[in-house]
Image (cartoon, rainbow, N blue to C red):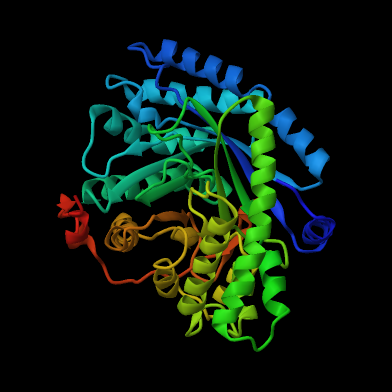
Length: 453
């Protein structure tokens, strides 16, 4: 993959002035051969395999960062969904494994480890139920362990029983981490149609269809895309989409180059490049500001969903032109706490939870890093999750919820999570109840579009 001098200079400008970065290099590791009837043996097997497979990960990533001059913000590991390893573990066994994952992450020097997960879109195994029962404790007692729950899919429908359990786990995790503003909830994602190769936390896991170990890379460049749009004031939207595609093409090429160099150095297969416009709290690194650069006075006003749809489509097309290995989520993320422009829009009254839900129908994931009042009922959280899962199931796309009921805080207050997680204004939820609906439980059947065989 060759680069002209002009492309190199352009990339340098993107890095120095427009916040272009490799957001994450994520090593996926299969743990399917680590299971044993004894959770202590399983935990020992897991620890040894993660360390032996990932021992060179952080040094290699730092080497590539120095070699190419592109900032690499996070280094992560994703493992096989832990509930798949054994059907007979007690809740205590799963807690032991969570502690082991955290210990391994510390030993490797990585930022996060994902995969304390369960796939329950159609029902529960005994192992799934045991994992669910310790989720709050596992997330609040560890620093780097992330969890995900796939509770719905277009093929299977929506598991309302799983959603209710997930909502209860979120409330309890918030209470257990109350001194840190409920931050344990930031490490749990509830999915519909979860991809098996997503490199982004907190939802990353190493799918059962993946190789023994792979390198997946997530790249990001909201500032680069915003600068492109600002160069073309008054350009019609079709032509503007073409310019966005060209920009995304360039940053995808750089990202795949570095990902393949990492995989070669580690002698592991290269998986995918996830081209997701993932914002940070830093000024100029905002997806909301991209939408406003298109001509919206404030993110959340009428026209926002259409602008986001165009952006997401252009990102996917530009990435697909640049690489045959685009995967994961690939599009635009709209996490409120991690996006300075989103925070401003919420505080200005332009962006509500209802509008965010509409936007998730056309973006990469869903309701992400949403802070709500700490006294929000479990059933309301379940209803919010169910609505988002329905968008994903009916539209045959990935959607997700990462919601934080902040203990002791109310609408209009702000809470700081630190680092890339940023700070979030507490958003209002609908005060009318949905208790009777969510308590019905059961399975919402798959839509007719699931019958594609």
